[in-house]
Length: 360
Image 1: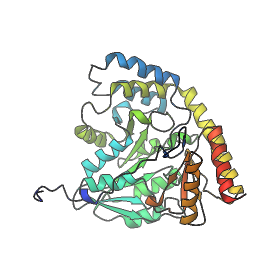
Image 2: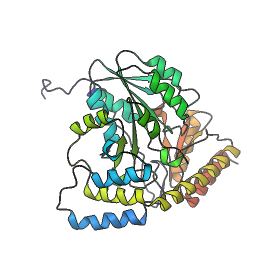
Image 3: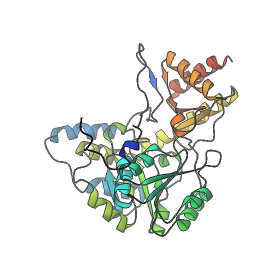
Image 4: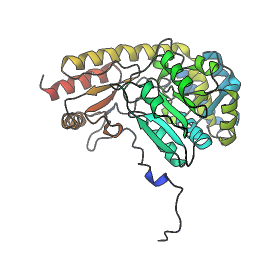
């Protein structure tokens, strides 16, 4: 084997991303609560749009995503010309790092931030810089203190994954105003749809030329398998991202299903309400048996155990019961388990199993 062929600097420092497990050896009909998927699935309108797309599989998809961009703009009151679509919001994150970071620059994120920030930074030769949080909540002062003249991108997820916590718009604006002139603030709004009355930071994007918001159809809209996301930002940033975006980066089936999904506001409201109902119930039920969690604004809770050993033992027990949750030691939360809010049956089963594990 030759050693002359080498990847770009930073790539071999990337730890392979581990998605949520979906299987338990020897068991069938398991309940997957490890990937923050919508337990109710996509709307019937989205499913039908996907079916209709099967008749045109030989056709290339739209290269400008105009129909989906217009639908997003209509529902959220945005400028469609400042929307970009991608293969999940992950791709928008990758575009940002490709276009604005590189060797000699830094990409800032919080200690419990989404793993793709670090991965995308390293993939482009940039240095990821991690700052502390304040009791699992984004700390604006720590982020501002972490900025240098090399900082080009500052990522925050709001609500955050895997903590479920969020900060207010005034704090986000304070961060946007305080970061270096050459830096962009990226608001990852993958879970924004779960917060009533929250625009994901869209109004701040309209007020500042250094903020971009990313969103996804993988969570509330139940289209994780189709990989559709979008971003909204200043015209000058969207123009740059479109120059690095491949012309056919989202399938037509994905575009059609996403358009139908975002137009079905009645179903989205139903999913949001069901999630809030069972999220609250599960958090309260677990707290009663000595497993606390922070107030979550997303579709999961971060259950805190007394130690890493207890968290891992609980996870092992849950697997024997056909319940798959997510260990988050990779996010520096070794004594926690992230549990997706499932439907009523799933929530009751996981609480019952944890109660059995705790001996209550």
